[in-house]
Amino acid sequence: MSEIHDITKEKLNGVGCGFCLAKWTQVTMHLQTGFNHSCHHPSVHKIPLEEIKLNSKALHNTKYKKTKRREMLKGGRPSECDYCWNIEDNSSSYSDRIYKSAEPWSEPYFDEIKNSRWNEDFNPRYVEVSFSNVCNFKCSYCGPEYSSQWLQETKQFGGYPTTPIYNSYESLEIRDSVPILHSEYNPYVEAFWDWWPELYNDLHTFRITGGEPLLSKDTWKVLDYIIEQKNPNRELKLAINSNLGGEDELIDRLIEKLKIITEEN
Image (tube, rainbow, N blue to C red; front, side, top):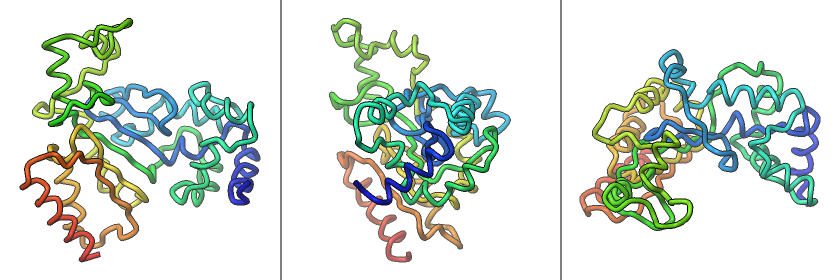
């Protein structure tokens, strides 16, 4: 047993048996499809376009997610978080509710979140973002939402011949998860860049995934933004999930920019 996790569990349960800071502090945003989730266990949910038109922070702070926060603050256990409830109810192990709430991108904000109103916006401290599904690979563990190569193959040959049909284009349409092409206007990416100057200063961890990030113009825009800051966020932990299988000039360009970021602190 870890003392820090025992303390975290006791503090969380003092608010409610389902209270978890990750519902505020962490988010993964799939901007090519307009989905997000806070913590990687709950299913993704669609970000309503009408919400981000009024408030770009709704990329994370959707009305749907705020109802789950209200449930947590009132002592409830959102059903979408059943991964953790199954662990807590059937073992003596710590669930990710405890682990994630004890992280340095969560724990310092316990009091702020506990005392907040459920319908307030909160800038997450751990952000993972996918700007696009453009990719030069079509790995078997991936899918057409995250690989333009796989999407193209799916359009040409259909989904895998399993029951039910796996990753077919029709299934994407049913789930409303057909990716917006990298070459097309994307209102979710537009909202991200509207929010980014404020979000950047609050970040503890920022991770760019894909698709292949090095094929996305927005990845380079992020790196240039960081380089050009007069007062950069020096505590930021930056990560890029790349297959490093692109052209040598892309890899060299990445190395050049990361050298500037690290060597100039």
